[in-house]
Image 1 (spheres, rainbow, N blue to C red):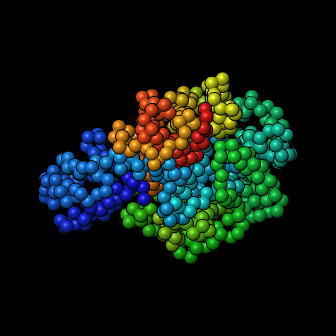
Image 2 (image 1 turned 180 degrees about the vertical axis):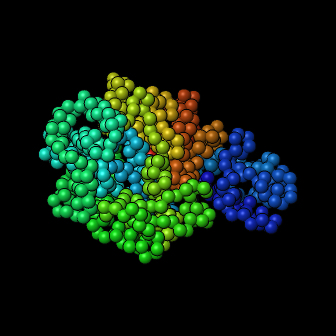
Image 3 (image 1 turned 120 degrees about the vertical axis):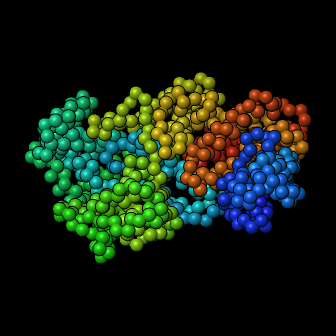
Length: 622
């Protein structure tokens, strides 16, 4: 166990034992929630709030902490002093003892790794295969990939999955548009997902415009949309307009959906060919940002294998299905307070019945998602399944958990996590799917590379400037997406994302390169010759280094990559202050030089490990 984790665990055990002797049964986990680093070094290095226990025992807080201080003193390795400060019981660690252990630990290649033994599935990205990945998908993908890394670092066995939504209306609209154009393949030299995105936008506008159910106002709006699309992609619009001759294109789209769901061989071949081409574009972008997915799951396979029909039949057998206007609807019969609590459903939130099958016999996304969730749990024997899905999908995700519960898959329902995230806004740019206005991830990366090149060209020490530009650009975009808590929206500002002086990936990458540069000049530290007796001056930074494993563990337990980002920025600030004040390579005192070099190496390794958990590469030269 790591030095700080071990010390904390031993400290909390002694407190729990002392409280037990007074008749209070307290779990170590509960005490851990009350533990933390005191606000100032004078108060100690680790502390626990005991106010609530003093109240339960009918004691003044300072009485309890004073009593416990006497019982704990002399029983903890590496502790210089136990301090009772009001209702807080704190410990101050011996600097030389802490430095020797923490700096040795932090020099290890896998520093911060744990050995938890769980099995988890993380489904992320899962974009509709009709257009390129955009900034919203980017946040989804980078959060998902970071969760996979953080959970693997925790010791869990993790599988990442991408759900290919090939049965939705959007894919049918794209295929319909392509059939009208008379060609399925993208033009030579054009990235496939980008070309299909254009065709989809135009086809969707024409389907809506020519739909008999649309009123005059709606048609006027779609005419405006089409004009805007024509100004961007005149050839596609003109060619498709000429060939758009169906009286009711919406009915044709529905017919394509139905035929695909039924497994019509010709339609099946067409859909699969188109979707695979779009996925090629996705994979190219994902490779560019270093994101891999273990398993690609086709929604259609669930239907053709009969898994979705099994779900519908099961719901019928349990008396959960009613017929309404020809559609099959699942009603939730057991939505009581206890179920709401166990499935994390807010009190008072109205949950409408779930349509399982339309009147035309086709199934809906959430119906298929029930079968898919069971598949994810059972195929991987997962303890938990985490769906990284936008916050706006909150209701369908609640319906999904509730449907699983009603069908008897109670454990799956409780262990299915909707990892919700908010929108990404880029000032001065507006997204509109219907108008084909999309801030694509490809554009964002190109723009990041262009801006980074302007900043580093002529000033970089690296032999391969192109490689540095790519790593910094990709890292900057990734960090911007994962460093903000997922429940908060992001405003993506270039001046913040590419700030080399604070609060960004380039700042952390630059700090790492600076530390590696010192080690190039000063050499590797000799940990046996380091003078740990001089560690007092650097104790704050050593404590920060020692906190990394705990931060990595908490990020895994709470599913919060932003904790790692915040931690790394704080560590980098402390290191850069040290860098400006302290000579390292030129330090004449050998013992002190080795101590400083050990500090530099520990910081470099910690930043490298932390950035890796966020999916960001750390170049050795900038």
